[in-house]
Amino acid sequence: MEIYRSLKNLQHDLLLKKTTCQQQVETYLQRIKDFKSLNAFIETFDTEAIHTAGLIDAKIKNGEPLGKLFGLVIGIKDVICYKGHSVTAASKILEGYVSVFSSTVVERLLAEDAIIIGRLNCDEFAMGSTNEHSVYGPTKNPIDERLVPGGSSGASAVAVKAGLCLASLGSDTGGSIRQPAAFCGIYGLKPTYGRVSRHGLIAYGSSFDQIGPMANNVYDLAIIMEVMAGKDDYDATASSNEVPPYTSLLDQEKKYAIAYYKDAVEHPSIHPEIRNTALQLIQRLKELGHEVVPVDFKEIDYIVPAYYVLTTAESSSNLSRFDGVRYGYHAKNAQDLDSTYTMTRSQGFGKEVQRRIMSGTFVLSAGYYDAYYSKAQKVRQLIARATLDTLKKYDFILCPTTPTPAFPIGEQVDDPIAMYLGDIFTVQANLVGVPAISLPCGQTQQGLPIGMQFMSNKFEETKLLTFSHQLMANLNN
Amino acid sequence: MKVDDALIDKLARLSKLAFSEEGKEEIKRDLEKMFNFMEKLNEIDTEGIEPLIYVNEAVNVFREDVVKQEITREEALMNAPLKDEQFFKVPKFVKRT
Image (cartoon, rainbow over all chains, first blue to last red; front, top):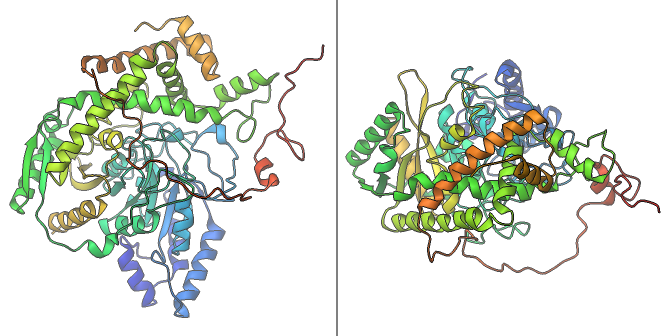
C-alpha cells in the first residue's frame, strides 16, 4: 500500500476511488505496529478511527459534501484533550486520566472530516527538547534510532517522517514544534500567539504556548491552519482577527525583503554544516531575487535565560493544579492532606518537571520576584521591540532552526543548561508572539536533516506560508 | 547565587515537593546552575522599560455570561481517586478536640 505524503494527492485519489479512508487507516495502524521500536504512539484509537473512516468513505460514495480535511489521518500530541480519551502529558501524574471535554482544535479537525488515529509521545508536560523526559520512555529518531527526534513534540515529528500518519499536531512553547521538525526533516509551524485556541491544551507556559501543525509540505500545514485557527469563546486570548484562506493564497510569486542575524549564523554554538547550509540558503534566496540583509541582534544571548525565567514561573503556577485530589495519580500511602499533595507531586512528576517547578517557584518568591521575574519581563519587552522593529522593515527573519543536528539519546539528559541552549534560535518567536516555520533545507554529510526557520510579523501566516511554499518548490526542483 | 539547604527546603515547601537526601543534592546543583544562567540578564540595562505582561494588544474581550452545564457531576468526579457520589474526598484535616 502506497503511503501518501500530501493531503492533496490523497484527496484526489480518494475521489477517484483509488483508495479509501479505511484502507488509509488500516495501513497506518499496521505501520505503527511495524515501527513500534520508534515509540511514537502511546495509544491508537483503532476502532473509532476505522469507524470514522467508514463514515467518510460512505459520504464519498454517495457524493455527499465533504469536510476540508477529509481523509486526513492525524496524530495528536499527548497534551491535547479529546473527550472520552486518555491524555497524560506523558506524565505519571496524569496516569489513567480520561478527558471529559475536547479541545477546540480537536472539535474543529473532526468537523472537517479528519480522522484522529491516536496520541503521540512527548516530553513530560512539553518540558524538554529531546523527547527523553517521558514516562513512556524516549521516542527514537527514524533517521537513526540512536538519535533523539527533538522535543517536546518529538513523536509528532517522528510519526509524520516515518509515515505513521499523514500529519500531526504539536504544541510549541519555545520551539517544541520547530526543533523536532528540523531534527526529523519535516515541516512545522508555530502560529502567532493567539491565532489558535489553547482551550483543551494542557498548559505549560500560558503566555507562550501555541498548538500548531506538523506535516510533509506547506500546503498541508496551511489547510490544517485554515481549519484550526480563529476566535474561540473558550479562550479569550484567541484572536478574533479573520482567518485568511491560506491555501488559496499559496501560489503567489513575490519578492521579499529578508533579514538574517549575523550573530546567529556566526554564533559559537552553531554546527559548521548548519552554518554552511544557512549561508548557501542566503545565496540561493538572493539568486531567486529576494533582498537578503544581515542585521544586528544584540540581545541574542539573553533570549534563553529570559525564556527560562518566565516559562518556569508560568509552569510552576500552571502545575499547581495537580494535587492528587480531583484527577490523576494519587499517592496511596499519604496520611493527611499535606502529605497527599506533597507525596503525589513528588512521586508523580518527573525530574525535569520538578526542576522547573522549583525554579519557577524561586523566581516568583518574595525577595527574588523583582530581580528575576520582573527583570525577565522587561528583557522580554526589549527583545519584542527589537524583533518587531526588524519585522517592520523586513518581511521575514531567517535563522537556522537549531544550532546542531539531532544528537545521541542520553547525551544531554543530565545537563539541563546544554539542553536549554539548544533552544537559542526558536524561543525568540515565543517571547515575541510571532509565527515561525521550520523548513527542511538540506542535510549533513552524515545524512541528518537541517531545518531553517523563518519568522514573520504577528498574524502574517499567509505571507509566511506563501513564501515557504514558493521557496520549497524552488529548492526541491 | 548560592543555593543552600534552607532555600531548597523553602522552595520544596512552597512547591509541595519533597526530595530525598540524594535528590536534594542534585536539585541544589541543578538550580544553582539554572539561577547563574538566569543572572546573565543582569548585564542588560532595563532602566525605564515596562515589563511585557500581555503578548497581544487585544484587551477585554467580552461575551455574554451564559450559564451552561457542559460537564455533569458524574463526569467531573470520574477521574477523582477518592470520591463519594457527590464530592471529592480528601483525608481528614480538622482534628476533633
